Length: 313
Image (cartoon, rainbow, N blue to C red; front, side, top):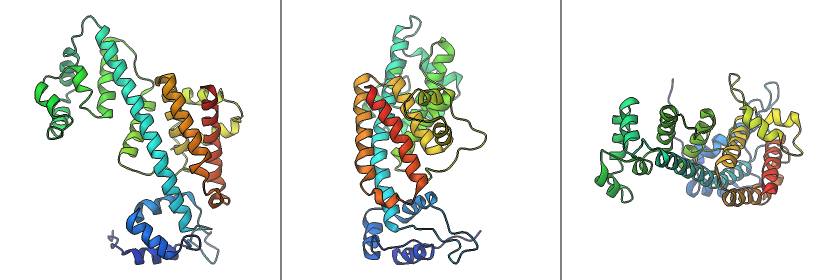
């Protein structure tokens, strides 16, 4: 397969015009400045997946229909603001998982805080991976004292401060298996939270494929479906439609898990932040999406879910 050449910004603008992307709202000069100082082409171009191309029989076959550079620019900005909120919610969930794990181990008369870690590293055959990952943080200012003091015999209350979210899920699952206690919701739901957290931490796009359907082999969780079914003004057809699309399903899953783990003050704060975001920044340039029924439909569905949650708190 031939390698794609690196293009200059001017060449990228030409490439976009060849794809049918217009510059009547944002000028080419403004687009050039945006790509030079605020974003980069691969990320911005990924939002094209939300738009249709002209049919093969048309004069503009293969080009995008009614797509302005400004629309992609706006989606990237909305995405950035959304990631900030989603990241905070994922961190809140992560914190609550640590609290619940430590609470359960503290109440366990057979647990001293060290036994679970030794057993987990030995039984799960993951000692090298986790300890190697921890060593990578040894030069960092925020973890080095903990690592120097305890390495390699960490108590559980120290280990949870040094491992990734995915590793935290693994050790909780191991504790559940060995103790018979339940801390986590369905593992598939927690993996979605992990994926969202990692996507936000690495500044990956959330809105670049908001209309893409889930893989045919996957089905929405019955818990998440019931969660939405109990809300007002969300028709069954709408629920089925949007919970079978990856982005809205992931967002509703986040809201469901957050609702299960977060304390009332945190829920009230985050739901209000989301509601304000949906009613202000997300629709600041609503005119850009007048001719995008799929984007508007996704927005309206999620807004109803968020409005329902905000009204409960």
